[in-house]
Image (cartoon, rainbow, N blue to C red; front, side, top):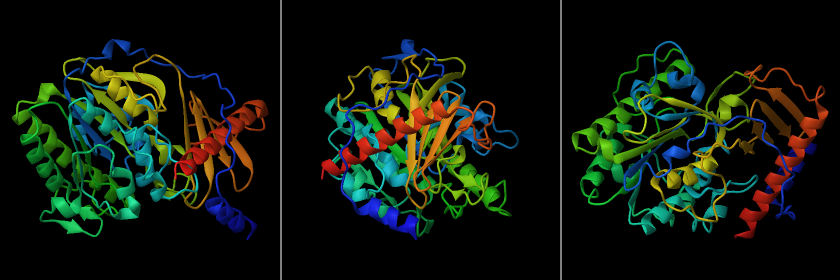
Length: 415
């Protein structure tokens, strides 16, 4: 009862005074210098693919074995920079959009409508000011959980969700991804007189793992995990149609690809951890992230830096040779600078996380407890080292709690 009361109070209270500076951390991870790719995509279009509920651990370019659930994505990865340690800021699709569209973290205990006034620094708005056509095509519905507050007034010249896309296959959550790809290609046909920025958001992979459509389902559906991977395969076929459609239009060498998951997906790797929005374990947060620049790389490059989806807008701007919006958080992942990633969840449990090279701390706010893991030695996050290294655990806790307070004050202060 005490926990429930505290959680309700946190959600409805106003913003507390926030620290202007976070307790400093000296990042302990490594980084790959990619500065030679700055400006390599100058004048080119961008296709920004946000894969629904797609965890890095399930994909071959990020170490999975066996039958490939996304072979067309693996094909795209062969000429790309792959960020092996990329993380969502929030393991939920809607508020998480603030990170990769606006380079601003969402905040704990806030609702989607809090973000309606925070769109001025959006990546599509910056690209539109530089002459890009801009569009977002989503197989789901903008009405879902207040998504409209995140996509309206962000600089998109075209916004199309399931209600606009239509198509022969439909469920309550949306329409088949292939229909969305067909609409996106039709839009490209009328908008490639100058560079374009196209965001494509499929829904294949979202629970209950019954994506609309009639694509192949090679993993079957005998378990949730099998049905999930069949969903990913079906979504990958639609991604392949987008790749092939651009190639058929002679645009293959004119498009920079940026592909990442919006968050991961859990299948009881930790007790009670299912779907995506319950915890901040690796299965919830660790996502694939790749950047493919035409003719820039002959083989994949596995970048070592810890990456946050907050870094995506500055990285895209750097690849295109454009100045970043000074209001953006995050950094360009082309810089060979070690970084940390921070995340939170507030759906049922209230947890914070900071990832610093091989180290990860999880702060359980409801239990006032911090846990510390060494991911290179313990990727399953099974052995808590907080008692062995209390100083490190305390530094991470102070840092990420100050970060969460700052972001909450910023979001609520914009209302």
